[in-house]
Picture 1: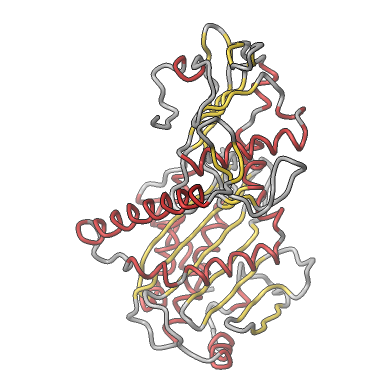
Picture 2: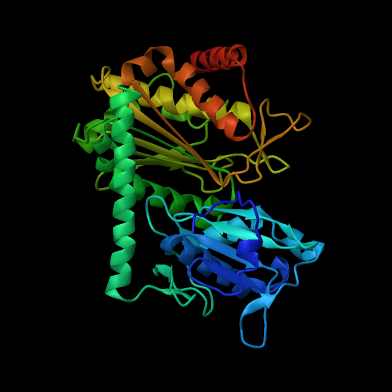
Length: 428
């Protein structure tokens, strides 16, 4: 069954009359009244469907005396409205790693209202449960959907093999698309092996940032991540020499990160076994951020964005943050004599579902809303370009693409104005 929200007629799905590997039915209920255990059950079904072949969770269909889903009661308005995409998504993806991709639709059939969670199969990595909830969820488990319509942990070797095979197939398809893009679309793109070489460092840095900033906060609040790395991983310097390079940064310096302040908050910089870490010395500092630098050729940072009422984030601050990151990375790699090296620039904005963007950071202006959970932007530029002034224009391009995910479009004149403003901001 092809998984999509674009059904010509939901009748075939809702009136199926039997649960199967891609269909799960629930009686009419209120999301806010089913409790923690009830919501965890939805998370289990969502992870299981996504780890198998995707599918649908239909709410508003009860069971008859034989246990078949044939009681088409539908839902009242209060019940249906309780299934808000933001709250449902936050709950499901509090337990799932990586986040489950799904849509929530509310079709009407025969004058009855239903709620349907459209769960898509995983694209890159299968979903593992990262927390416990009563008898519904176990930490460290891959849930699957079986042919007898159960959502349970994969415990047979053949089931785990099936998950691995699907992941490998997805990776092969992704690699094929990347190769076609390199050959026919963008000959300046990064080599396919580049991202793979830094995968373990990126995953480790991401985990470290979440531990420092707080798992709950980074699952629920606007959360910015950026990574800049070389095309080939290699040991550039010792940690001692790497520290000297970092301390010698001038404009911007680490004290300008994540935003320049009249009185910069005190930072702590220390070495681990393979990196340098930077974060505020005071755990109660108003700006929450984490930065990790690897002598292997990776610059990583994570920042909790200031949240405005709405909830919303300020577009101006976001654009400036992108510019600071690119300017710091460009300066650092150029100082190492790598100005001609092509860098991969990765930006991620997390927990964006139903989040508003305020382009000028003013509460009174019109808001632009995002309808997806996370935003990913990838670019490539040389370190010398970024050091030579392209940090501002590249940050403006990144901000423009992020804005499009918020349904906020800039024309070329507005984009140039943003780039000029960021250049002035970096030169102060």
